[in-house]
View 1: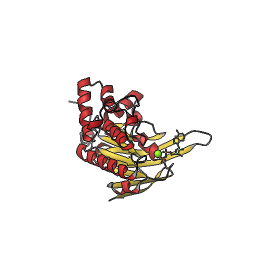
View 2 (view 1 turned 180 degrees about the vertical axis):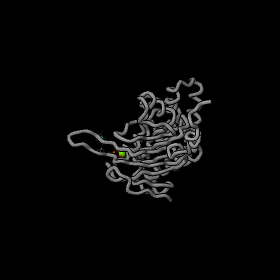
View 3 (view 1 turned 60 degrees about the vertical axis):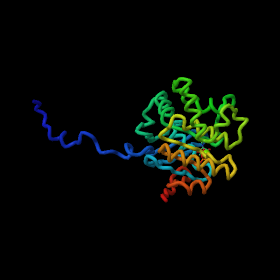
View 4 (view 1 turned 30 degrees about the vertical axis):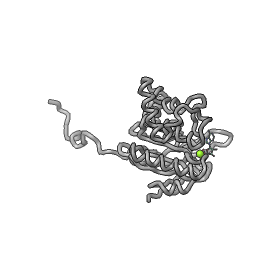
Amino acid sequence: MSSTPAADTRSVPATRPPTAAATAAIELQSVTRQFAGKRDVVVLDDVSLAIPRGEMIAIIGPSGSGKSTLLNLIGGLDRPTAGDVVVDGAHLARLSDDELTRVRRDKIGFIFQFFNLLPTLSSLENVGLPLHLRGWPRRKVDARARELLNLVQLGNRMTHLPEELSGGERQRVAIARALSIYPPILLADEPTGNLDTRTGGEILALIRDLHGRLGSTAVIVTHDMTVANSCGRTIALRDGRIVEDLRR
Ligand code: ADP
Ligand code: MG
């Protein structure tokens, strides 16, 4: 028998009650991002934010307010100067570059304004690329990529190159690619910003539908108020700070 008094430790529960970090899909903990230059620019200034699992939120704000910077930090494409970002339980600031790459690969689907498709790859190959990089066998990769291209209604554009597709079609390929790993987190930076209103509306409806089906947590940066108003929650940024957090 140990002579150490046990009473002290016994009062501490074996499992600690869940923190916000454990229950939220995404949590920003006092995140600051500063860029060094002739004049240091504080692009995000002590931002804290918790996004529960399954939520679809819009981030709005004027150009230069820090929206893309925020999204890139959540997506592990960038690191905060101070503070931490917790994504699906992983504290990104504590991870090595390799670990961060793994989190990005396994948990995050990223959709960009300019699609970022590889120009020499077909739709099928672009969508399959994240799975290929994960070491999936060719047959499985192709099957999943076909399934997703059908889901975004591009079953008839499998072998087309990006340059042979319209803007809306390219974005649908990009969405299929972002979803190829069935990511728990879906991030979109102005996904409708380069599309006409009608196509933009269709892309948004598609993201919403997929978000609903896969139960992913979705964060959409937009300056389109129609897009923002259709999300359950809107965060407004101004000069690197959250100035509004609105739930509908
Ligand atoms: P938004 O997406 O809201 O338009 P960004 O997050 O792209 O804004 O940028 C916010 C501010 O940060 C801008 O003023 C921009 O010039 C600055 N910024 C972004 N990236 C860098 C960088 N790599 N170096 C210096 N300043 C940057
Ligand atoms: Mg931006």
